[in-house]
Image 1 (cartoon, helix red, strand yellow):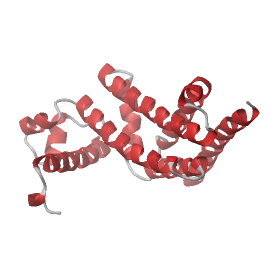
Image 2: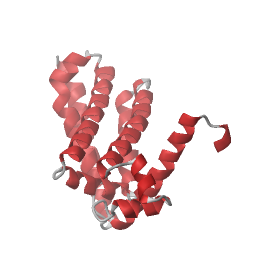
Image 3: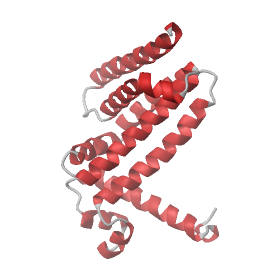
Length: 207
């Protein structure tokens, strides 16, 4: 499909995706705080004024990055929910997510965004929304695996979902280090997530 065949909404969506790709590269090169809005505009080949039409602030950029990531995760979790073994599918997704973030600059970018979220309420609100949404996706998987209602899952396993989100986030944002040590840490984190999922399954069986 060529640009000429796209409708206006599709063209706008594609242009936004191209801008975000360039923005990610600028963040990877200069850091989230280090890259000014002028740097970001330059990376996209746009004037500052035109860039502001798309993204008036870094918070707006973060919100769009989060919206894109959540849309992708929603598709991934939809596939998990149709799996015969939801927890097995979830384990594969978690491992792939951790490794993919560590093998590119995204993990460090999100580490810097997380740090900025502590100082800037608008960014903090956006990242909190993302974590809450992912925990919600996880609880749907818990319900699918256990046969419990969402109300029961929320009452019994909301903390488990938040804990898994915290572990995956921490793993993805690991600073560059010796590969052997990174692999050992990944193994510990993935084993902890396995234990948490086993606890959910076990608690349901006992009930």
